[in-house]
Image (cartoon, rainbow, N blue to C red; front, side, top):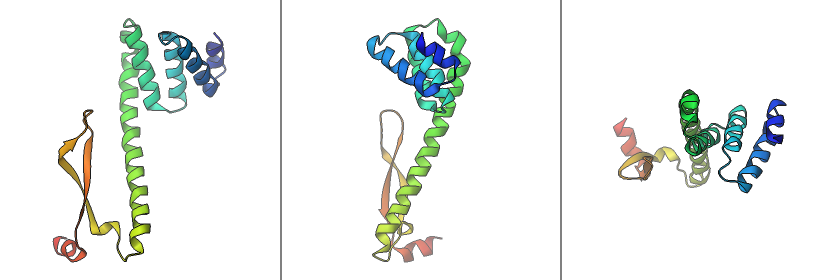
Length: 142
């Protein structure tokens, strides 16, 4: 009940905390998952909102029809956030690599990041591998 009051007050971090505590006490408490999903959505934590909404529908399948549009939206936003975070992470890794390689007169431009067709994960994510390409070779290729 307190989480419902906090939700009305739009105290989203407190809603997450209260619902998380309620879920620890009762892992099948549908309303706690549903309320926490709304709070995560307001905090723009799309993946967490999507996962909690999926869990609430799993616990109470009658919610599926009511929440189907929200599930679709959150799934899309979660995927977009994942791609954005991945791009940001790769950019930071490249910057770090350039910092280290720069001491040897090299940069990540000397390497080529390629998708490895022979590997991948069970959830469909792609694997990548770094291949070293001498700079003159890359100049000829471009």
